[in-house]
Image (cartoon, rainbow, N blue to C red; front, side, top):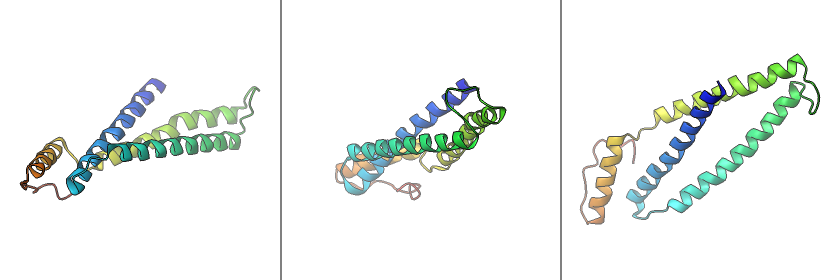
Length: 135
C-alpha cells in the first residue's frame, strides 16, 4: 500500500508543477511577460512551508497517540501510526485529486492559449472563445 501511495504522491507532485507552467502562460497572456522564476520560487517556498507544517502536525499526532521514541510502542500508538500513514495520507491524496480534477485547463484549452499568445506576439488577436474559465 505504501508503494501505491508513493506513486500517487509523485503523480500529484508532478501535476502541481505542471499546473504552474499553465499559470505562467496565463500570466504571459495577460502581461506579455514570462515570469517562471517568480511562480516556481513562490511554489517552492510554499512547498517547504507545507512540508514543515506537515512534519509539525505529524509530531503532534504522534504525541497525541502516545508515541514514545526509542521504546516499544503501545497498541494505541501503533494504531495511531497506521492511521496517520494510511488514512491521513489518503485523505490528502483524495483532496489533491479533487482539486486537480476541477482545474479548468485542458490540453485543448492549453493549445488554444498558446496559439493566442503567439498571435498576440505577432500583433494579432486570437479566438478566445472557450477560454473564459481559464483567462
